[in-house]
Length: 248
Image 1 (cartoon, rainbow, N blue to C red):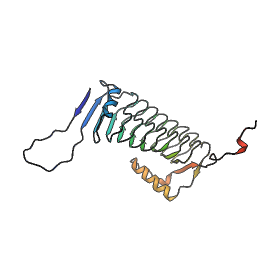
Image 2: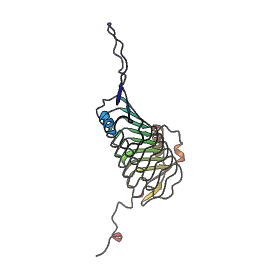
Image 3: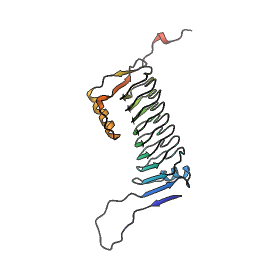
Image 4: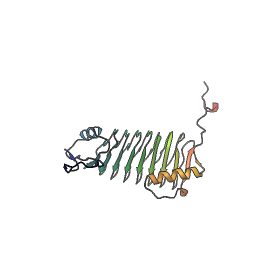
């Protein structure tokens, strides 16, 4: 059952100055409503609305394909592919998220107050994904412009084939970080288990400190940008080497 709660209005016979419109408030209880009904309802939503999803129960594909400027809060844990294909507005998950969080995000903001499983923000083209806890393996795999800020650690093969965007890690990074990376930028505060092919540490200049400070502030964090190291592409894989070819 989808419950719509609209703000009360007071009738008046005298003309009054126009007031700012109060956003409608909608609560969807997934104990009695299907995921399909939830997603259809938010696809029909208008800009400025606020939605709350209760009893998510780790269900998959919650709040996917949002293309209106709305705010969605999921009160609890989300399953696979939560907030996938996100285009506008924001989704906050007050719990953990499963595999494929915010996959192919185009813009907007996704915030997880807990941990995220594998492949968070995979292939993301834009927007901001904030994970207060840890992220699993392949975080930011094939990212194409998305910004990701992780408050804890990330797993192995993160930012694999990352093409554009920024990945900020306030904890440690697992093995093969940035393997086959293109032009994405990676900032890590803690230790890196190992770097992937063609990924190297790079100087942290003033423009990078400013960029990092902006990303941390956008994620609501107070970490010191000077405590991070920057990693990126050595650009050795951009070019063909005849020694790597096979003679027939």
